[in-house]
Image (cartoon, rainbow over all chains, first blue to last red; front, side, top):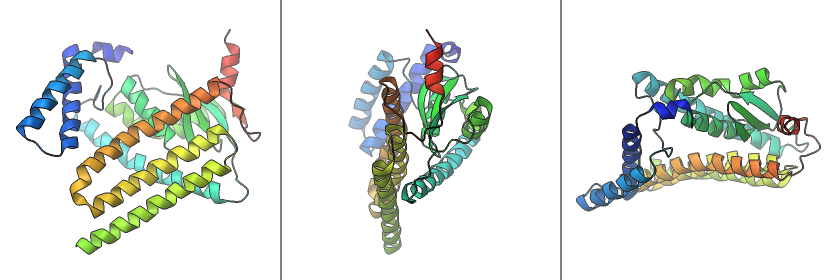
Length: 172
Length: 112
């Protein structure tokens, strides 16, 4: 656990967890009626009380207008990168010579929160030719299908920087 | 309007299938476990998302549930491949001969 999550009051974490669970439950049922709500509230509350330190979608989310704007921009960038990575990988896979240059590089992140780091690792795994293999504190070990630069600074600039700019604002 | 949605849904389904196919070919052609995981993760994520979007166009009343499935997929897919890659590295699965660098192995070697 990082310092960031410790400073958040327990009640707030439980409330966030409860709200997220209830939202997913209502979405899953697809209707808002009394019986659905009663069951949802009971189960969500029980889970939120039992696992207050669990990660959920909005854990450590900074509810400011700036964070929302950054969130939208982040998803825009994310889907653009996802499509780009798929086209690139399809091109590599379909070319007869299989032009890969794989390797595991080390990058560093400035993000402090657990959720921010989770989102960063996930984003890296889904974007051009990179896959997070191991995480140790601020260091991420990333498998790269076509290695661009092998030193820490160069790899960080190429892999991490784009997402980190937005995630820093959203989660810190 | 309905026929337009049907057309869009069909196009999305085909696009999703094409990406899934490229992922499948990647699984066969890539030289080692790590590169195979890469091919598998990315192609299946986008392929499945496009397929779900296509289904949402054909059956708009399912859209909310499909969105939920997409969200869970977006979160769990990279996580599972990361855990697979880490497990592979920990048990020492060999990398392809083309591999140029392995910083993780270097750092593990330094530690007692």
